[in-house]
Image 1: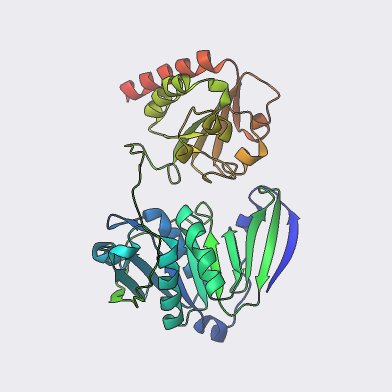
Image 2: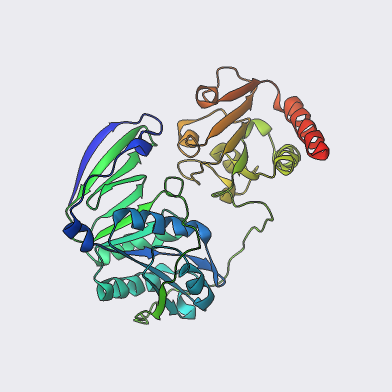
Length: 348
């Protein structure tokens, strides 16, 4: 059962929350399973935010990873300080994270481990799998948390970040997803956890993986990049989006993002969407180009350390959250900025 206490959002108020005191006996009874992700046997570094959150709870922390061949990824995860054990399952059926087979796998290992908490990053994978796990275990999921007050109480944004809810759960098992920008990925160093094989129920499913068409890029990953440049509907076309944004990103060594309006208009791939229904980012620098600043977009980037904006509309809402703003025609100003950045890089 969940109990909510809701208050208006005050920017980064969740960062100032103090963890409630916990008795030693309570902490010793806690045990958390952190769900890690992988692709082609390579550990997804972003998913290590689940371990950071798990360590804040106290008690023992185990990690779980599954796929066709995850021995290397499991050994890498074992190097993270604070993990006692890495549970791995190597089976091609789990390589693509098909929820109909992955959910029973998690349920089997959660029951076997007798965990009090299960934590994963708030990613497309966990959004697909963990609600099924929660349903199978008859517990309520607590999604997208930004802070932990104690083992029963968590903080999460609601209404596109306009309010902050403090949620208390009385369920004996908590299924939780965490916002990666609130819990930085744990460093792969200082640990020496044991690695062991987990239970494999080999659940039968009629769902079959057919194919995927991935967009490949040498740029920094949007979700974890320290610099992000995002384009909006003001760029007018896909050709202009690529012509303006690509050189700008190259000059800064930044990842490229886009507003939902730009994605819906076909200017950019949906994997680049930043916002409430896209990726939530918190880079050191976020540069918004031709983005008006709809509340759904702000929900995905307002925790950025420095926000800069270029827009010809001086009354655009993006300027209300921007640390630095330039009112002007992006088709004139952005090429000038890119040229100056390239000059600085050459001098360096």
